[in-house]
Image 1 (tube, rainbow, N blue to C red):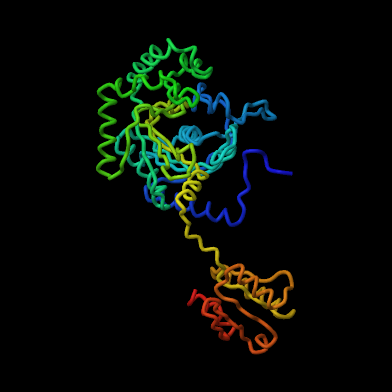
Image 2: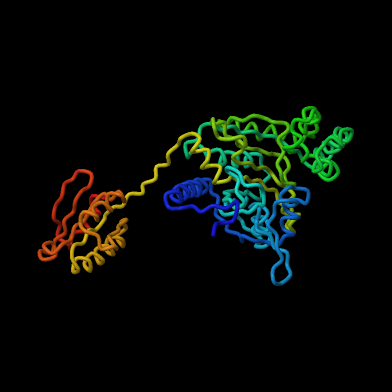
Length: 420
């Protein structure tokens, strides 16, 4: 038996890296005053049809959807924002006196797509959502958090790309310009883009198949159609990024793959050599209409999401070793039946005092137990035999210095806590 295609087993030695990264992201979120939310792994399919958009590739091609025993259409979540906003509306978080509501999440998402390096059918996403503020400053804050998620782990080859998708008026004007521009060459576009031309022409700019078509290069820019409010909003976001010392590039063709975005949109990419053809690490933007679409009051929002898999790939591409200490504090070597029983008590005491401790469970000889301690990188080996038991002592060997001394058993915990 093998795991399903597009999934992976994270084994000891690898999971420690994931835990380290996840703890770093949680700590960073806490410093920005974002609080964790945990939503179900599956939702009613309608949530993603309404929240993500019927014209998106996610809804049309990539969702894991099934009918449950109650004849309800259920979908494994393909992204996190729709679920977070659904929960925000359902639990009336908009009524909290502390606004905006600042949330983060981390967990598995599911998309049926061709598995490739850094893109799995089950993948883990970390994301943040700030709901309840239309201040350009919080756009900059979310971008700052996204950038620092990578920088604090040591990544340097980063590129931030931003754009404005404008408000509804701006987008409507741009939408018509795109229709007028692409209609003459409609038959030259792929089937998806031909369908998008009528439903959501902005998504044509995000097409991977037609990216080299001449019409793509000359397509009208949304920046040319921003009204005064949208243009001013974008300028303020850039001003905040400037004063925060966050470098960026404006890309007039940047659009996000989901229907709910407006105003600020951004992506963070890796410029690291050997990272791969798909350079995008994360992306996000503002979605001022999504809360209303899901039955809530008019509430602006902005957020981003990143893939933990791609983050780890970027760390590998830049040869960054995470400072993970997998050493044991102590390994207890027991010689003889009475010592084995006594060792179980010692191991229990040391673990409850906060130390990482292990012992032999395969009846190995003394030399083999020391080898096991070496493999586990134990800092100290505690030796308990008949002589030590008779004198109420235990031998403590410092594996780095090689020094060894006998310690009274009753004083062992306080002694080790003093030096570890």
